[in-house]
Length: 116
Image (tube, rainbow, N blue to C red; front, side):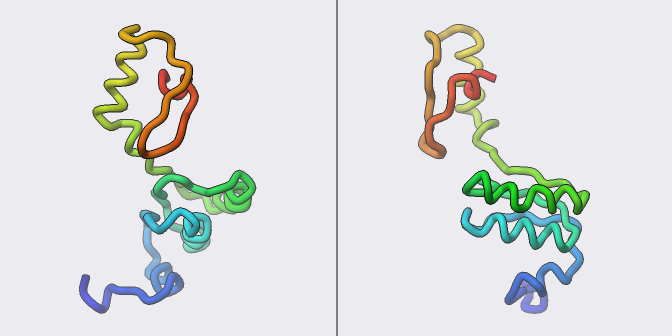
């Protein structure tokens, strides 16, 4: 990136009046980055998780709704070849009843979320 397009702080970055932002910072900074984007009026694609705790998510959800912009969570694993094959095997009854499942990328999830 050319030096004139680099930013030393978030205020300079958002002063560019961007249409959309992809938040890929470490998870503890997601909420602050999403709030800054809402304040700047940008749409956001944020890597998972959007927030680390439910109460933290509540902090920005009202503000985000007022901004009237799109906020999307990036969760690409759901559409990976492996996840789609697992879903197919469950739907087609190739394996027994699923009671729990997990992955190397995100802890344990319920059987319903694996089978939907």
